[in-house]
Image (cartoon, rainbow, N blue to C red):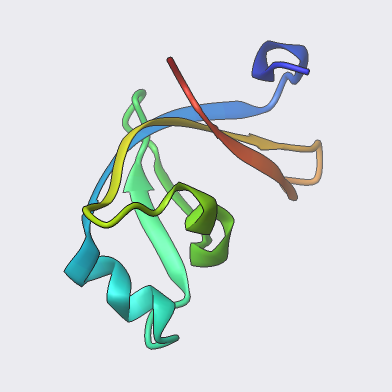
Length: 79
């Protein structure tokens, strides 16, 4: 299923170095705060992007998908 099947999605870019992500991994930071492509500020649990972490960190364009109650469904990369 693609994000276009959801009416509630926001696209954003992340550039988090491995050193910066270490704070999330160690638990001293719980949330990611990012600015969306349409200039909104979004917050989501750091654990939601764990699967995208590489040795260099997390870099790329992503889409957060949420339900009508603003509950996170998933985050996926945008190609």
